[in-house]
Amino acid sequence: MVTGTVMAGAFFGNLADTMKENREYLKAKQGMLQDYMLKAGFEERAKLKEARAERAKLLDEADKLGIDEEAAAVLYSTGQLSSTVGYLKKIEQSEDPDKKINKAGLKRFSEAIVGSVPEEKLGAAMKYAFELGAAEDPSSDKLVEAIHATSLDEYDEAISAFMNTSPTTRVAPNISPFDINKRGLIDYDPADIKAARELIDANLKTQLETTTNPNTGQLQYTNPDASGEILNNAVDFYVNEMSDSLKSRSGAEVIKDIFERVDTLTEDPSIDLRDIAENFKTFEIPPPFQGPMPLSPKTAEEIIKKNIVK
Image 1 (tube, rainbow, N blue to C red):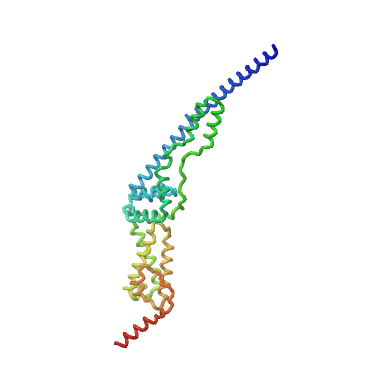
Image 2: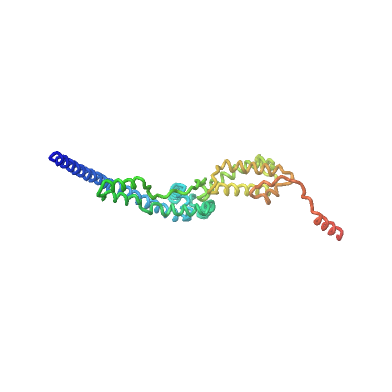
């Protein structure tokens, strides 16, 4: 009996010690979690709040510069809004009178951005840009449960859910980055146009008919009217291509393109300089000549009747 009593006393004594150790262990764990929540948890929320403020500021700046809300959301999703806004702000603050934001070009840019994105992705971009981080991380609820757990089982269950719960951050929609031509977002510098005109003029004088001016010894166009119009059209083409905000091309590439287009047009014996000046202002290349289309029997009969009447 005595032995049994001693053994029972030892058992309950060990059980009490174990429960005490468990309570102390749980208390230590909860203390560690409280430190985590006060330090890491609050720090994360402070960072989230700061990120939200920066995002809101960026979207507001884009709006003030003239980028449409939807276009700004799409650019934010691709990670290109910050650099675009930064570039435009530099232009806005520039003291160079020839460097100004092209408001009409910026509007076309916004329309092109929005128009190139499917409606469902546009909606996703809007949610991503304007609602990012709006919801709190639900795992914080489990963190609170773990801190206030009264048993190791409750603690283990809560902390397990906390570790397995992903934060509620939105994922950017799958939109490919744009080939943004920032040069197309500002007014074209007259000095750049003048330099481009001189290069294009020099090229055209190797392609169009020229003679040597007896007084100056310089080349001049044999047909100055038509050639002059072609030159003007070529400069307009150059500016339009270089101003395309969603197509990055170097000046050399565009001038080479003009050269090749003019070369193709002048090689066609059915097209003269006046045709090029009036009917090929954007230097579009006509399809290969396929010969006259065969007439239908009905059309041929009508033509014959008309000629007989005459």
